[in-house]
Length: 213
Image 1 (spheres, rainbow, N blue to C red):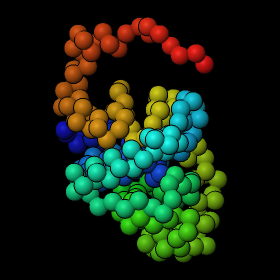
Image 2: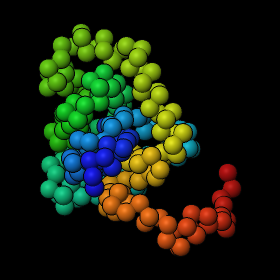
Image 3: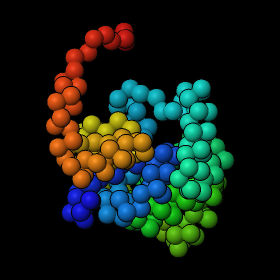
């Protein structure tokens, strides 16, 4: 993958997502060159009419076990926060206020998912990690430009067809989820991977049956 290819990538994520944390930590070479775009996962779910893994009781447990197991497979330290799901909006706005820099996003992710700490209950500690005074930080995340930027990120994601996090956007194709990272890397090495006959056929595959609304 060339630096020019990586520079075109956009990465949509939400701090509430353990899969976002794992992808961020597992592929720093991608994260340090991609445009990091915080989005509210709940907003994507509301738009597409879906449910998050943690909103389905049986899937919630499976997701927690699976992501913790995956962290071990990747050698990534992981400790779940005290409660999940949690409201990530202040953390998302904080990242935007800090220009969604790699360093700021990494610090927030690791506070939540490596150290297993609560953004709501330990907000001052997170701000101290980022060398921010509480009053200044509160003003930053309350700024209209920050709120507008988060909303704009969500609209942009939806316009591109993003339905979940984490998602990489190459400008042409979307790659959702940690498990799709190898496919993304293959695509970056050879964009014709989706031009194979069967790839073209399944892209136009008709719907054979649909559930009633």
